[in-house]
Length: 236
Image (cartoon, rainbow, N blue to C red):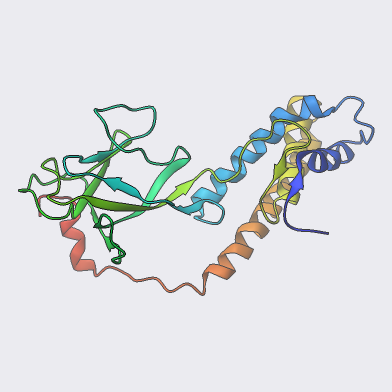
């Protein structure tokens, strides 16, 4: 059986079987879709929390910052004319910068809690995450910059109908058990069946994150010296 993309209908067919309603007499697609989307939301948050695929993303294309701009906002926040970060962004992992229009390597910027008000430099150097706005030196940079974000997103879109494809490897078991648990609890009002299904969903979630974590053990991580920690609050 394929571990890649499945349709929402395939998931809900399994849910109906788990609820002893294979003909979907009571548990129709229309009835189950809201609960499948709740399960998708929980799985997305689990992937974000454990920093697993498909939550990790990199901006492509990168974000141009003309001279005079010093923040990146969401599309819903308008502060003058500023570039926007991706709509699906939920947390920022790292920000890199380079001179706009070049193929230079990106230089990782330091995240602070509070920005120092430094004279303008050729680069930004620092950033903060404040009120859902990425802010740089208030005095800006003297050269146009090219910004790259490594970020965490909600990686699994909601489904609209039974034909919607769910593009996540190994998600079938968790989504089936979790959706069935929610339906058993809030539609069937069968707490014992809901608990049994919830236990199976938890086991599926553990397997899913364990498989991903085993693959990530091969990734080498560069640790920052502990002496740098005292500088991370700003006013460097």
